[in-house]
Amino acid sequence: MERRIVSVWLPRLPTDRLCRSAPAWRDIPLVTASAGPHRQVMAVNRVAQVQGLRPGMKLASALAQVPHVQIAPHDPQGDARLLGALAERCTLFTPWCAVEGTAGLWLDISGCGHLFGGETKLLEQLTGRLKGLGLTVRAALAATPGAAWAWARFGDATTPILDSPDQLAPLPLAALRLPPATVQTLSDLGLRRLGDLLGLPRAQVSLRFGREAVWRLDQALGAEPEPISPRRPPAPYRVHASFADPISRAEDIAATLDHLLEGLCRRLGLDGQGARRLELTLFRVDGTLARAEIGTGAPSRDPVHLARLFRDRLAEIRPGFGIEAACLEAGVVQPQAAAQTDLGGAAGEAQLSRLLDALDNRLGPGRLMRLAPRPSHVPERSVRRLAPGAPPPAEGWPAGRYPIRLLPHPEPIEAMAPIPDAPPLRFRWQGKLHRVVRADGPERIAPEWWHEDAEERDYYRVEDEQGLRLWLYRLGHYGRAEPPRWYLHGVFP
Image 1 (cartoon, one colour):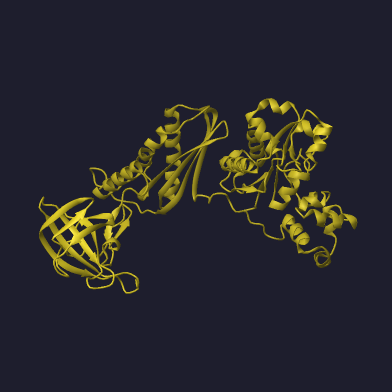
Image 2 (tube, one colour):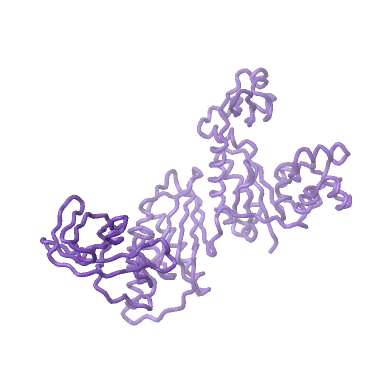
């Protein structure tokens, strides 16, 4: 498959971001300025540019030239947040989106053009949606990131698709993303266009001007690879839907989800896969996103069951001014063989799996679990947590008269024992005195040999006058420099 890369350039992102919250500023000269005693102009809007202001000039010079200019503080963090949100927004067109610099985006649309009626239509929709958000945008499509970047900033805006690398020859050397000092050195020697470098021996160019000049040129021409790391890992399965008119009713959103689930589950069935993690993304007309995510304990491609898990999540979604597109992704999938069911419906295991999925998604991730034994004598390390749908472990629980409820952390108590190694006669826990009427122990539990700093524990099962049965242990021994310490670790039923 031929690689197709879109480079999106937002030349006035800082001022466009401000004008989105203050539309009246669009018709007046507006600049953003750095802080400090020697303030500089960092960005200008279209009106300020027409009046001769430009980034990099002193703010005092800008005020002398345009006294009524509107000045706003430069906010790179705010610009970065908006750029990240736009990258998420562009996942409507391809899952392979990334932020480029401080005012650009990469989109790898390889194999995606036909979903939007062709690459030209895709570019029109992409730029149209960004312009609808009040942004100044230029975009170009080429076979390499370097060529797309160069054409978006220095190419012909009326032909955004670069058909041949030969079209790069008239562009200035700044289109190669070279440092300004390197561009100036090449310009002083009469090399001002990309075409001027194409006919020169690469070894001599690399020797005189550094490896970067040849490297960037080869990247633009496709001779050197230039990978793009997406902002989010692309999901293995993805379906989407767009609407002629925005939707906002809960019934329409649910119907859209049902339609997407049917298509996704059909694809999963053809590949013998089942979904473990699903995410629904709704694209609002104001440029914001709404997401809903569910998980399953076992692979599933039952659209009815998955729609039921999404039900509570959909109730939390606020459509705002309307939803113009939706995307459903299966981020985690596993092989799922076809299952035979009886005449009465699904088997008992399938019903249990669906119940666990419903509880897990209702309570929240990590709140529902299966406990399994772990080979350790230390009580707090003798239990491990598994997913609720995990198969039962092969090893069984160790035989012993241990409490089924342990405290989150052993709580210190004050205890008095008549002789060493004897059970305590009474102890004080949380300010209350408990008198022991029955006791059993000690049972010595030693840690694993690789835990060198851990001490042995002597455990006792005790019962007080009110019938409360507790599990105590002593850390340390009598007769040593440091007296032993007593703790309450568990409660018997």
